[in-house]
Amino acid sequence: MNNHATSEFGKLSELINDPTIEELWINSPHRIFVARAGVSELTNLVMSGEEVRELVERLLMWGGRRLDLSHPFVDARLPDGSRLHVAIPEVTAAHWAVNIRKHLLRGKSLGELASIGVMTSQLAFFLSEAVASGLNILVSGSTQAGKTTLLNALVSAVPAGNRVVTIEEVFELKPRVSDCVALQTRPANMQGEGEIPLRRLIKEALRMRPSQLVVGEIREAESLDLLIALNSGIPGMATIHANSAKDAIAKLQTLPLLAGKNISHDFVTPIVAASIDMVVHTTITRASEKTNSTQSGSGEERGAGARRIVEVLAVTGRVENGRVETEPLFSLREGLYVAGLGDPRRVLTRRMNLDAM
Image 1: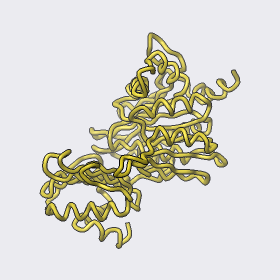
Image 2 (image 1 turned 135 degrees about the horizontal axis):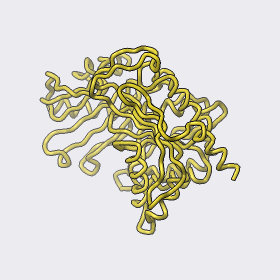
Image 3 (image 1 turned 180 degrees about the vertical axis):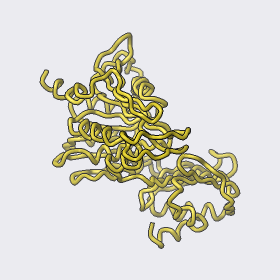
Image 4 (image 1 turned 90 degrees about the vertical axis):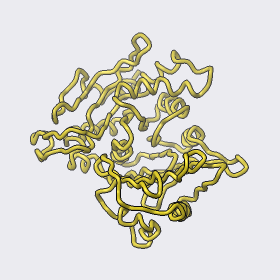
């Protein structure tokens, strides 16, 4: 951040400027926390309630969002790409709850993520091939596991000449592609009008000649619109909260049911099987592990809080007893990637085989 931007953070400026801090949040004026490498800690910083409110008001001037009793939540993007979330009473018990996620790794390529240990160079090459082959990729993981960072790197691997349309609740993605249109949701105004949800943006994006459709995160009924778009032949990617790659597929079979009573599990399941090609699961490793020098090229010690891709799962396209059939491609075990039952070469040619049918 520049000096002017940093001054807007007041007492938080030192924490904002600390490159080791990836996220900070205020539970109350006397309890302010930060996260380093995925591990949280309580700071000794103390603010007044008035200072917290003034801070939020300054930051919201950048994001163009509003916060009041009729809209007690706000999600906004700051100029450097960091994400601000605020909740106020009576949704919270007594104090304003403020969260600033800095996204320190955003903008890196697959190769750069490999160089810092998120994956091996071999896996980075495979994922770049998967993107170039037009595979539909789902990135799964928990909060702060690096899903957005990994998605941004995957989108940046889209071949030159492709037109990318990104869809997000708040602008976070900044892929390194020359032809990209970024769309963002809009909340309703004070009269309850003018809201533009993710579902609407996905439908509008289809009219913008996308070569790649990217949804920052799917949480609800918009998952159905994305699946229908992918099933029509438009390559795409998205992130989803899940504890494993298999859980991500199971969740994707459930979320579209929120679109309406006429949407059934039997309708959604074959669409998921036909639309998703691969799930890449990332997490924050808690136990220290030694990476293998022949895989990572560094042999360095990975401590608690390191973000790693721990699983790559292929979707076969088949359904068995109401479940989408999957095959493991790679799994991280004791610092090494172990090949699974799936054939990576066959996965890379899946879309070509489907197009030929």
